[in-house]
Amino acid sequence: MQILFLGTGAADYDASHRHLSGYRRNASALIDGVLLIDPGPCVPDAIETFGIDAEKIRYVLNTHPHYDHFNKETLAALQKNGAELVTLADGETKRVGAYEITALAANHSIKTQHFIIDDGEKKIFYGLDSAWLLYSEVQAIIEKRIDLAVLDATIGFVEGDYRIFEHNNLPMVIEMKKTLAPYVRRFAISHMARTLHTDHETLAEAMKPHGIEVAYDGLTLNI
Image 1 (cartoon, helix red, strand yellow):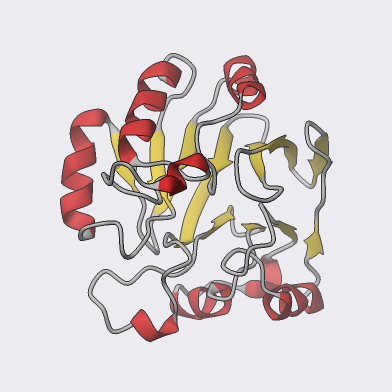
Image 2: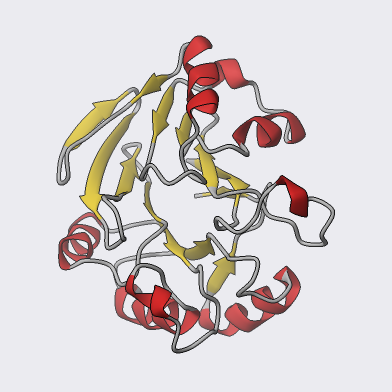
């Protein structure tokens, strides 16, 4: 299984920041070229930039309806090309093409879902926009054993920020990684806020001792 990070930034990135060094599109990801997670406003630009064949995208998942993760025009364009918006109830598992997808309730300010995507050989946990993982999510991770967990890292190393009740700072990510390491083979972070993070290279160097990869736009990981 392969994951391509189309965007790795939080909501405080927009097109006006494209000139900035280290610009990140709003967070979204593409699995095996066919399964898109979050049809946000930056997806069309990412499709063009990374040379993606949009007609091969068959399925779309959406974590939640915040504007940086869901855009009606983006979804409509994908559906025009034949993509299907896949919806699941919390705790539901559904067969979608070659994948078995499980939706899990997440800890965010509005109804949000995280996903476990299983192709029969490998499993990805995609968990952006949340604070500490809920107990039900941890139980699912322990049961299924995950090859790659993508965790929210919105707040960086900032402490005392009220947003820790719906997003992670990096000490939270590091603690979860220590705890989940027996059940997860590989960890990565995404959804970095422009105003709460340093440059990518500094962040990657800071996370390297913890065994946590820092995603960037265009990063492809083969699981």
